[in-house]
Length: 379
Image (cartoon, rainbow, N blue to C red; front, top):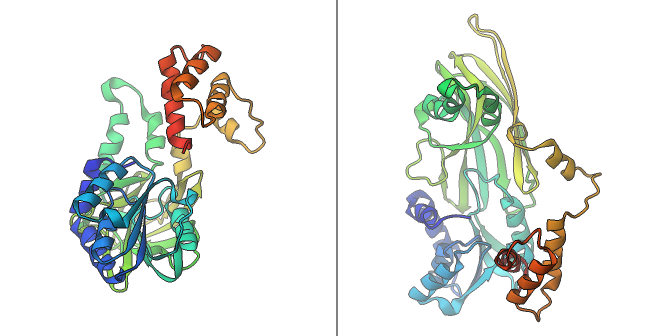
């Protein structure tokens, strides 16, 4: 979930905000129904109302909707906005929309469960012939030189105070990060990784094989990725290195070590992004050709290698594992079953504390857990 200052950064990003405002203003017609998926404080929903929408469904699973309601009232749009606190995939709307708006990306569109949410909303919420904003995202990749960022990530694990912490480096260097870079840091011409056309069925997976040719000598630290979006018709923006004010930044997949590169040298990369369990597993296999006496270098990397899973946690996630609830699990099941539509949380918590004294040392502990479950699962 985003913090309020992060929403402020999104509004202040004039490349993003200006493009969305222009696209919404052109796409929304007087009398339209609009759906804003992942609405946050409802800024796009307000823009849709200003463009003449008769009704806007503003959907968000976070805790920012009270602010969105305040902003709707301040702008005189309360009567036209319907606020829904939920995952959009768990909702059914009473009518189809003429326009569907979203910005639920991270640094890249391949982020968490954003793509399944967009496809579900298009299929179930959008009227035939309706308009999506955005319509298309295209992701690009290249080799990046970023010594300061790379050192900032790796130096804490290189023998501070004489301690050997090197085993953590393999975890750090098998991660995906957000960077802000400049065009002069790029060591190759960019190549397209994938295009996501939201107006048609699309895959949440992406893969491509690259053969980059180094355009200038430098020290390669990994791969950077960004996207260019077509919001509506000719309206869009880019998050490429050097983009002014972009809140997104660029994605970065580091190599296991910096590699000196010379102009004309070839770098082959097989890049994969696969959705797994509500997030993405990234895999990047790199082969750097021998050049001017330097030997060939080969790296095999994956964010799975950087994940901190214990063998016990992996065993419990295996498809043939037969789960048995722990006492804490039994307590949570009991709490959910006790939410019968007639009993207040205070009574449920008091009974839970008596029934599961090893799980809930005090009634306050049971009430805290019951409140969280009620917030997530109750109506």
